[in-house]
Length: 137
Image (cartoon, rainbow, N blue to C red; front, side):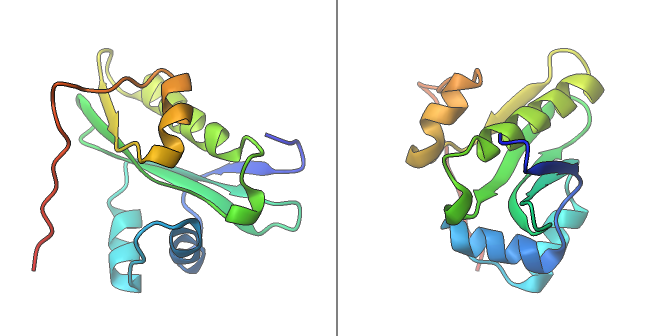
């Protein structure tokens, strides 16, 4: 990541979190959903551009024991391809390694645009398992 960017532990402000989700192509969420996600996170970080504007983020959901899920990795499209997403994921993994018990199980959902990045950081496919989801009404 270019030295003109600053990685900050903790989530970005709610409005920036919602903007980053939307602008990066993640499913948009409303303010109540975003606030709940931020409050329920085990850890989070974000990246500021040289003007102090949040341009990337990520968070970890975890039980503090053995299971941790990296979620909401989002980089403003105008700032992609600069190592910012890599810095966010690397920080989240380092945070898990430093605070979680040895042998923690770390997962994420690797959409096609991010799969190469995640594999380069040590993540492997869980095949023959298959990720599944349920959206509530």
